[in-house]
Length: 419
Image 1 (tube, rainbow, N blue to C red):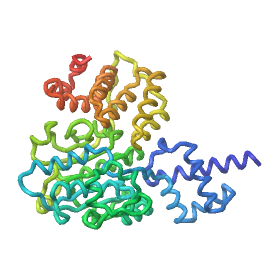
Image 2 (cartoon, one colour):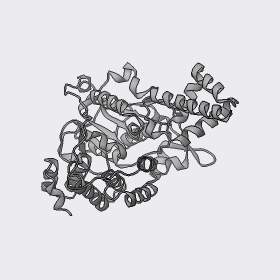
Image 3 (cartoon, rainbow, N blue to C red):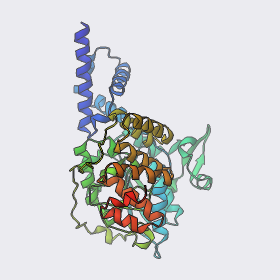
């Protein structure tokens, strides 16, 4: 009997994993513990004690499948999360002599509205009116979208919002809760959709900026590739793509180029200097200009860079590295760093760990430590393109343009110069 029960539980877990895959989620991001806890919680809620009966419920009930998918999604977010992307957004606007109009921004994986509303606040603070821009916000969770439309947030979600902004854009409620006022809500439209099946009202539009931060890391490889290709076609030729720090490596073998300096994790399809002010704006487009389709070819390479033959590149425990990335995505940078450093004790030549450390240090504006981490990654694997890209950004920002240029040309000797 126990063997039969164990078999039923295993089959139930496989069913949940298969359901996650239909949404493009990666099996590697779902631990057995997480799946087991989710199943136990849903069985308790539905008052079903038998695994076979609950499996039947999943197969026959759209509502239960939606509830499971909701529970699998990561909703952790807060206003002005990792402030550099929003600072870059504002910087572009302030460098323009003409007041922008017709701006279109897209937030993919918008959770409970924290990101799209942060974009709205940033643009309003830059001097724009609500008629100058529109923001489309997409999320798979109907629960999250409902919360976003309510616009009620606890103080901890607003911890990064400047006090003057709180007074201007929020009404204080009881028990340390705030309600977003109507003005910053007005330009934002929410859509319930999967990233792989966006509605035509979004899919057929070109955007001046697309935010898809801390979303693609949870997707399977094929889903990531499809998402990047879709985003590429939806971005104006000189538009900006903002990703999460753990996703920066996904763009290292595409036609996207980093802009905006370390910590912004911003990319453009046009090769631009690291100083965004020296380029024409990657955001400001008139409504008429934005109608033109992007005629630059979109492609994503899946080939793996060659390893440096001089150093054996040891691999860390995958679950440990995945956990560290999740911690960082949740803003728990210190915990992520401790975990990554422990992985280096086991695998001292793990390029992926040094690269991840560099990304976290960059997000914290600990530039010196980020630089050393990327240098170590490149010393171990001179062909590690993601580390090369981020190190070049840091060198540019510190005035070492010649070394940055050598890195971009793929000359590994430039790494040794900084050892």
